[in-house]
Length: 124
Image (cartoon, rainbow, N blue to C red; front, side):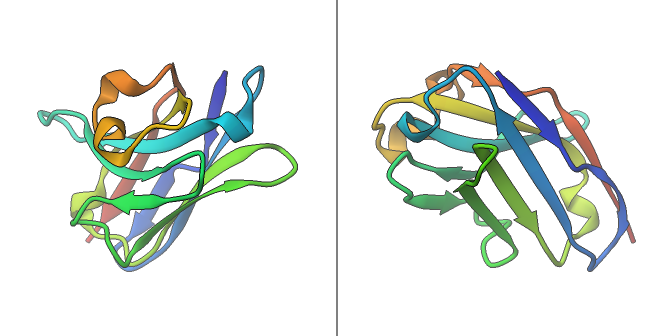
């Protein structure tokens, strides 16, 4: 299971950190991703980290967002800086079992587990 935390309301240029705590899964054997969905838009992949630690980002967040995984609580984290109003969305963490290549991990149906959504609102 995945439990996400860390959303909120911030001003443009500020930073936020999401955490996705896992339970009941083999943490080291999973890839993790963060998706987001803004009103009226489809869900989009923001960042992904494979079980081996390779990362990939949407062009819109490169250089501003950093995905990581690990720690005592077996979490996937998303560090977001220089936030923009267009980053406003509901964010979801997801986990996929196995050693999957990045192209496969770009498909939302690759993911076995999803956390609950957490809202981020960036004001201008």
